Length: 475
Image (cartoon, rainbow, N blue to C red; front, side):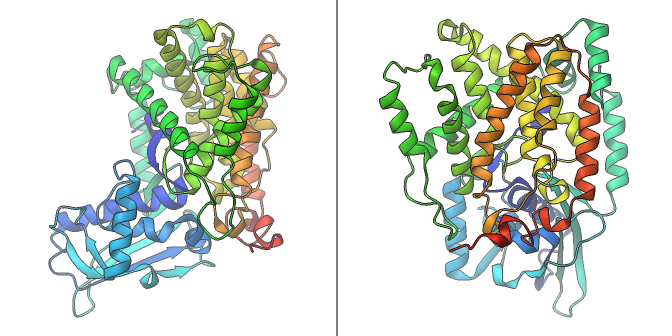
């Protein structure tokens, strides 16, 4: 299917869309197919091979435990954090996996644990660095069923050997859209010919598969999950899991902000504290993500705090929002996410949103660009101004490496979301002070990001072989 707004904003668990959500989704697909194939009752053993970045940084990203949950049949958009903890504790205690069970009791009990997975950190499969292979065999060792998947960023997965078919299906499904676009130039052309904004074009395309009411309700639900993610994070204290002993800052920062901003209420914040609030929201979301909590992939988990932080800015610091009705505020949310989603489509189709493929410019850079577009749209920007905002934000994230310490989505990831959110806001403001004309187009920047990612040394692309990952002592 054509990439839509609900593909780019999906609900899942932390800490990584490509290393947690994608592998869980792939394992769940394999488990479902295994059950349907009839091989579940005849199998005797299970083998899981993880390649490249999944093997190199998987322990810090929760890849192996996510695969276990997926093999039990759990899907990332449905499983709750409490279920995650309960199932992982049971598997650790009993050493037994309920293959394709997912709480139904109809799965196959199988002795299997994280330690049984086979890791190939130095082997990269041809399609993508995030490769994984699942297979089951009978008592004689004959393979009954197998499948190879790639986690290509943002929770998206592709099956080996079906890339051409998937691209063909994507191209065919786009023909069914009323106003398809692949490039920013095409998108701006649609806006000009129809006299519509970028969010309007995206809404028309989304209506090809959902009613307008379903789209609106779905996007407001996405925002509610983002808000709940922040609220949950602000109640947590102590240090983040994983061994780096990174202290949670969001609760203390929130307490300090409430003291320094005494006039604060649900709808009004003192404008002089706008950046502190933006920083707080970004940190809160990504601390929750680092904890394995429930987040919205936007468009990845590693960059999940940027769009909520900038949307929070739009709802609390944009002119007139302190007097806006709930209807008006909901309209802002929907319009923001549709415009951001339209820009996300451009990155997904022309380049990549995978840190393991193009570095963090594909994650934080794409999210910053999407957020800048969303903000410019709700602040009344014209389509060229919105496109300019997205271009400025990405232009100043080009070359951003992905080198998390200890393979954990903590340093530099959490602070990087706050910095990128501020960049997005500044990009939108700069674009709105212009008339939409600019020297460098968004398409040119997206192509540059893709080419920069190809040229970037692999040690700076989520392999734990360079940058901060090797130059900072973990403990």
